[in-house]
Amino acid sequence: MKKKYDLIVVGGGFAGICAAISAAKNGVDVLLIERYNALGGAAVHALVTPFMKYHTKIDNQKVNLCGSIFTEIVDEMNRFLDRNDTMIFDEEVLKLVLNRMAQKYGVNLLFNTTVTEVFAENGTITSVKALGKSAVLELSADYFIDATGDGELSMLAGCSYQLGRPKDELCQPMTLCFRMGGVDLKRFYENYKMMNPLYKAFQEKGLIKNPREDVLMFDNLNDGVLHFNSTRIVKKNPTDPFEVTQAEIEAREQVFELHKFLKENIPGFENARVLSTAIQIGIRESRKISGDYTLTEEDLLNLARFDDAIAVANYDIDIHNPEGKGTSHHYFKDGEWYQIPYRCLLPKGQNNLLVAGRCISATHEAQASLRIMPYCAEIGQAAGAAASVAKESKTPLREIDVKSLQALLRKEDFVI
Ligand SMILES: Cc1cc2nc3c(=O)[nH]c(=O)nc-3n(C[C@H](O)[C@H](O)[C@H](O)COP(=O)(O)OP(=O)(O)OC[C@H]3O[C@@H](n4cnc5c(N)ncnc54)[C@H](O)[C@@H]3O)c2cc1C
Image (cartoon, rainbow, N blue to C red; front, side, top):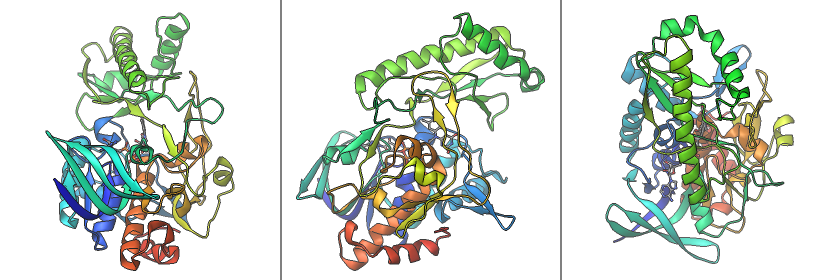
């Protein structure tokens, strides 16, 4: 089967869906290809929640920094649930809302399909091969966006990349997120303060092997349910399938280690059960594709401004130690944010390919801030808009007029 589109977006996480909607809104015929059966990416298949901070204060007014499509997604979920929450969400509602928005804006969807091969000539991708549900497909387009999180499309196209930190290629830890049900939340919160000191004491005695320094958990919309983001797998390569398999096995042991610790020691967990684990271990960091510019920690600390800015962010530089215990932070104050240039989305040597989301061209430290879902969404929206500018002007993505792109984005609530 062969079909030609203006744009193919690979990956249906926040970067991919926002890229696809943004392009479709601006008249681009777009196909979005996703490996799993729903949109939402890590929020859905790695059970990542909640949304981290994506606003700041300007003149004492709360301002969203994430662009219009992410705001629309949150508004749609709130409308569906008849509530008003900007951080905690229900991933089942997210999946439904994203399907509906994709259909509303005319995005062509292809689920249960993994892109496995790229055909290119002189730095221009012509088509991709994908294994769909029971069929091999070849799909062509004028432009491509890699929103795979792991930079898989770019890797297949032969792009260079940085894995983890330059000195040892270690990435931020992987985490298998999970939920516990049957928790007596009232009793637990009355005794909350005893949990982490006891956890640390157990760790020191060697009774807890998980290297994470404390228990990281969040409230959930369901009664008696808590969400845990607390397993920690270090020193494994998230792009090596065998090492990821080992990580999944080790993390599942950590899930039940934590369950046993809580059930046997913390009031409120007496009847708790492991309700669900994510279908894929969560990957915070893997390939960061080398682009025309690489965003650095220094840029973030200096609140950098760029002539070709297409996005902004202000989430803290949140580095979970790639070697074991500890998490480091640098927080941005109200009114502070840095810009991300278009060049970070342009893989070196590629004419019609952009990267979007957590795999853009950034150092280990810079990626630790821009990687959160709202900013992946914003970067995706910018990438999709860039494809529409390229289509309109009939130019390769690397030759578009960035001023036209910026004008388009400012109309979509971008603070650039
Ligand atoms: C454990 C953990 C906790 C986190 N906590 C938070 C948090 O609390 N709040 C927050 O805002 N962010 C958090 N993050 C960060 C955030 O979840 C991710 O960085 C973000 O979701 C990345 O979005 P993305 O669109 O770039 O990639 P993803 O969400 O990873 O989406 C990529 C999509 O591409 C698909 N795909 C990949 N390869 C292919 C292929 N070859 N063919 C077809 N499809 C493909 C995948 O199935 C996936 O759906 C956390 C991350 C992790 C791992």
